[in-house]
Length: 406
Image 1 (cartoon, rainbow, N blue to C red):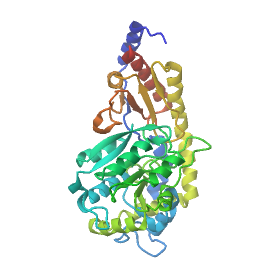
Image 2 (cartoon, helix red, strand yellow):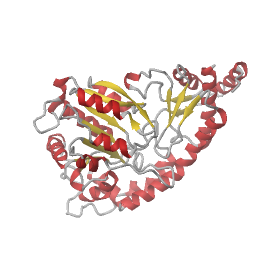
Image 3 (cartoon, rainbow, N blue to C red):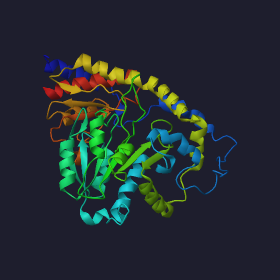
Image 4 (cartoon, rainbow, N blue to C red):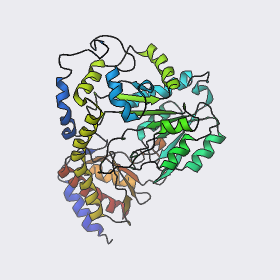
């Protein structure tokens, strides 16, 4: 692709002079998605009691009312006794789970992680908030490269088998953040069959986008809880999800699935931490969605909103750039598009975009310690702006890519 630097600089200066401000720094639902659940603001309506006659306005029920467990157990593909309902944030459940392990161990007489200088495996590019948890707790992070099947399992198997200080691995197995990949059946089975040197090693399976499909025939992810049971490792995995991008981001439902042994251990310590999460919010979700078919029907409404946004981003990328300037994936679901520019260009692209009024996730954020060794990965979040705003933002992005590459 022939690039005229002078012409590009003129185009960039013209756009910069427009005084735009478009924030694409996080994967936030737009008002058009949140509006779909506004009826929740009128719920619960009149009836505040659960099926077992507990008044949701009062104390009680530590880990979720029966109705909410029945509603969301199919989403995590676990039994209701294996499901713990938290507050509104799955990230908080992840943080609490790691802090509990750091201070108290994982149960069964295991030692607290903090006494063992713990390490975590981090598939990259990955989710910046996972990495922030580890960094805040002084847990050393080890990069694991990924491909279209998921993490490099040869590397994962070798590392966990040889180093007992490796206590966990972060995984976003369905429409990974930011790459959009879905772990292959082989990857899930090999993950479940790991033979770690540490008997308190845990897989943190953040299935945040498990029902966020963008196609009519979405891929199917193997059930990691079932695979771990088959492999004789039932306690090796924690599964997390939430409705933060389905209902209200600040008022959703967070959930954790685990073996009964793990779930009971977590409940034991939750009892010292809280008397229970917001049961009225749980009842509100039950009354709105009614059953899991209702959740799936609602996801179709969300897809109709998000699909044109992803198509707009991909359309501009494909019309303005080619493989000489970068590469990107076409996701089948999830919340992001991962762009890889030429080595050494990501920070400059993000800087140019910001100066022209488009705020992106910081370059390097998709790697531990904010350090992208090749300085090339950028996470694009199409979900919040309108289609028109996205096209405008991506024109700026593509000009910035061209200028940074020159």
